[in-house]
Length: 472
Image 1 (cartoon, rainbow, N blue to C red):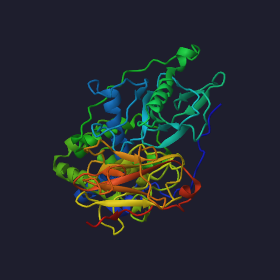
Image 2: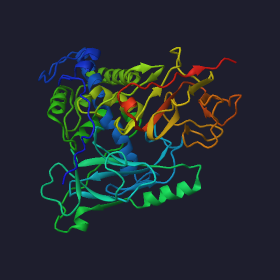
Image 3: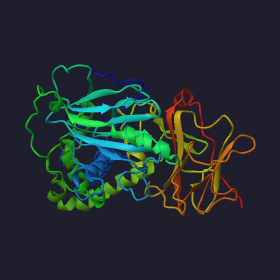
Image 4: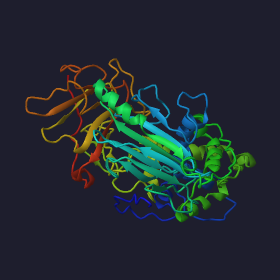
């Protein structure tokens, strides 16, 4: 049987194949154009628009490269094998922006060209766990785990877009839109409890990934060529190498009709699936224009990434709905601020860039947020607040090695009236370190995670309390 993963869906806003919002921002209205003679202004604008639209694909490759391609990487594990990380992320982990500090990660990237893969999960009744399946465009196309498929042990078969035939027994099919796909497993852990750590590790050890052909020989693997993956570097995200990577990656993605139309609209600036990107080298007089367009795209992403939905009490509330379908603009915003974010029905992420007066959060000040009794983040499973550097979106080094505060933090102190106050700053507050989340010296943001958000979160009715400046 095939698992129907469309468990929760809110109609997203209508977006035409012309990618209307970006057209307004960047002045590009030539969808599907076969025009070959572009002015420098048109080239600059189209490059910027393309950079914005396709940013999630290349940003996703940063993780694929570090985890699956670069053999000297400390994170390296080959394709079609599980990476099990039985530790929480720290500031030393720089491959993925805005990582959580709540769960052990179990990850893999699958190459399904030769045949399907089986993911086996044990019975998990004493904690939250999930596996999020992510396409190369960073769309979340399927989930398994506590919140979606329950606690029972089960085997799931991940098939590629060209798979045909009936699966044997009780195997549940998850059909991938592309031949290369990734997934992220999250297993809840309370690191302040050594017994809980041991239980979480024991569960994680039981996750298994095998080829369908190894268990069921009748599904013979197909012969496939080895993929020669190109080098990734942070510098490549800022010049023409971005489009070299993009053209390479596009050949492994099954695009929707709308996405294909958008891709076709950029052919006149050299973007095409599986084709060598030669537009930059072949147009010496346009090279500075192309680089200006790339910088314009970067600047637009930096500005737009802070517009993730509506702002309430200084908290930017991530947009509700499906992640992401045709909502291409939010796909890019989320890829910048927190790539691989869960779809809201699985976890919800309010993020604070500013205080109650609308001023950017900055370590030169001290702050607090107070949750009144009965108004803690409404989570079926658990919640947390995590500190990130405002520029890098990475975890922040600090003297007590604390990167998040949550409902599992040991020795949290509740106020006399039953409320809970959390403090942010570079130095401990007068109340002591129990409720202190250290901040960097410069700008920062705080991300709230609500795992298994309750109905009042998903309806948009619940709002976090504002972060306020402490006067000293």
